[in-house]
Length: 512
Ligand SMILES: Cc1cc2nc3c(=O)[nH]c(=O)nc-3n(C[C@H](O)[C@H](O)[C@H](O)COP(=O)(O)OP(=O)(O)OC[C@H]3O[C@@H](n4cnc5c(N)ncnc54)[C@H](O)[C@@H]3O)c2cc1C
Image (cartoon, rainbow, N blue to C red; front, side, top):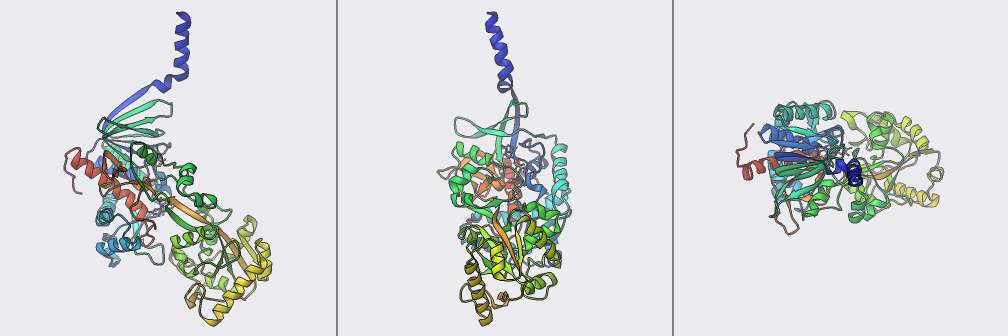
């Protein structure tokens, strides 16, 4: 008997925590506290919905630390700035960009509510300043955060609403699985806290907002084998697609798992986030968008470089061409983008409200040390330094110069304005790598952010928002609508809360 008791004590010491369980009962449990989850939890709190927010990391906020602007149409700011784009025009542009592959009902609702969602955020203390675009063909729908990034101001504003309404936020408490009843309704989640204790949250509805699967090698390999080979991503978080996996386990469908939100090319051997506090590296990133001659790693031209502003076009063409981008320019183009003299000073090289590429020379010096920039007195020497096939690079540049002389790009149809010969030494070469901003696929949702199962029906009680979802915009991220991703994350969360209130809690949504 004594031995048996001792054995029980040992078992408890070893596995005690695993058997322990804390239980909560609530109306809504939100999983993940990024743009989607934190905003939804605050909105639900403001609407009087009893809410619990679970976060895997020690801090809330997810990627709110790095986004810069958010999409909306019909805001006061736009009216003040005489931006004439109407909601119907924006909706039709999103649909046309996707060839009507995007979810029309979702996008109509998103566009129509985008202004009021942003104005609700501002009412709650989120500080915004101005509206712009961040792509050459983009609309002025990109509402900028006052402090550059929403970060602390946004997080504090949302947390204040949650706390004022006495709702609960549990950090270091990742959700592990969904709870369902016999009828298949989702009725809560099982999570685990930092002490290894199981946390059971019973709820009337669950909103999954755990971000994308961009760090999950297994999912990437399954849906994007060609991307796994040569691409980097710039998400600062370690999101593994937990919400997608949990949803799929109970029959949820997924969409666009092989679609990525691309970031175009980022210098090799450089972390994207270094652009934020290193002007030479910011300029190196911008230089890679100069529409001079672009070659693939084999030394061959492969694209109309004037399309450099469309990240999807750049990245798609890089996927088809070995992932690396080599941009070559001469002294004339250097002057052009440093001093704004001519055609190559485009939107990207004239970034940041008219600032030119002031740190070109520092970028070359830095890049020579880090292996992303090269300088030489001839094209042959440059190709050699870049470890490329000298004859092929030389032939490509000579061909390009001939086309420039003739004033017609019969190879790739580039506008003659952007067709400048590469003839004045010294010559510069920059090497970039195709880069993902985030994965675009995830759980399929409808216009109420309710998750759809593999048979096409809603899963009662289950909602998803933000990068956990997929299929809203078809296969190309709509760069013509800058800030679409974070705007969609916020609005889908709001739609989920309102649908839960109307159909599960049978309460009226308060206007604001
Ligand atoms: C460098 C960069 C710049 C960008 N700039 C912009 C921009 O200017 N405008 C724009 O619209 N979009 C931008 N994006 C895209 C944007 O960041 C995303 O679309 C958006 O952040 C997605 O929000 P989310 O809430 O879905 O996910 P996230 O912000 O990634 O949040 C997910 C949260 O869920 C947590 N989590 C994960 N698993 C679990 C679990 N099992 N249990 C509990 N919590 C969990 C994570 O820790 C995280 O806090 C940018 C992306 C990058 C990488």
